[in-house]
Length: 354
Image (tube, rainbow, N blue to C red):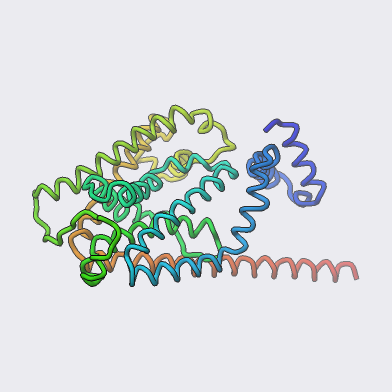
C-alpha cells in the first residue's frame, strides 16, 4: 500500500473522531495498527469483499453453525466411524480454505507454513489417499497426539463458540487427536458388525503391548521424525527463501517474528537462545524440533494405553471449555470496568457543567 492512501485513511479516521482523544505513543501505535489492518482491504476489492461480507457473515452465525456441527460429530463418533471420518475430512478442508482466506485478508498467511497445518495434513492424506500406509499412520498419530495436542495448552486455545478463529484453532489442534483416538481404538469403541461395514480400508492396528526396541516402536519414532524433516525442508524453502520479503515487511505477521519478540522480551529465553537476531533461522527450527521430539513420549504412551489416551483427550477437551469460560469472564469484567469508568466520567462532567 502506498503512503498517500495510508495517510488519507488515517486522516479520515481522525476526522471521524476515532483517534482524536489519543496522543503520543498511544496514538502512533493505533495508527500503525490501523494501517497494517486495513491496507490490503482498501487496495484489493476481493479482500474487501471477503472482509466486509464473508467474514462478518461467518462470525455472525458462528454459534449456531458450531452447535449443529459438534452435535453431528458427537452423534457419529458414537454410532458410525465411517461417516465421522468423512465429516472430519470435509470439515477440515472447509475450515482450512476459510482460514487461508481469512489469513490472506489479515496479512497473516505466513502462519500457514507452521507445522500444525502440516500435521493435520498428514491425517487427511492418510485417510483419503494412504489408509494402508504405516508411514502416514505413525506420522499422523505422533504429530496429532503429540506436539499439536500440547499446543492446545501452550497456545491457550479455547472452545469459544462465538468466535470463528478460536474454533478453527481448537479444531486444528484437538480434533485430529480425537480422530486418531477413534481410529486407534476402534475395536474397543465399536462392535465388530459396525467395523465390518466400515467403508474405510484402514491399516490393521493390533493392540499389542509396549515392547522396547521392537521394530514397530522404532518405526513409530523414525517415520514421524522423517515427516517432520520434510516439513523443515519445505519450511526453509517456502518461508526463508520464497517469502523472505514478506518476513521483513512489518505489515505481515508470522510465528517466526513472534518467536523473535518473545525471546527479546524474556530474560530466561535470552539465556537459553542468546541474541534472537543471530542465527535466528537455526534457533527457530531447533525450537520446533525440540518441541516435536519432547512430545513423542506423550504420543507413544497414548498409542499403547487406551485409558491414558482417553484420559488425555478428555483433559484437553475440558481445558478448551474451561479456558473459554475464563477468557469470556475476563473479557466481560473488562467491559464492565470500561463501562463503569465511562459512566463515572460522564457523571463528573455533568456536575462540572452545572
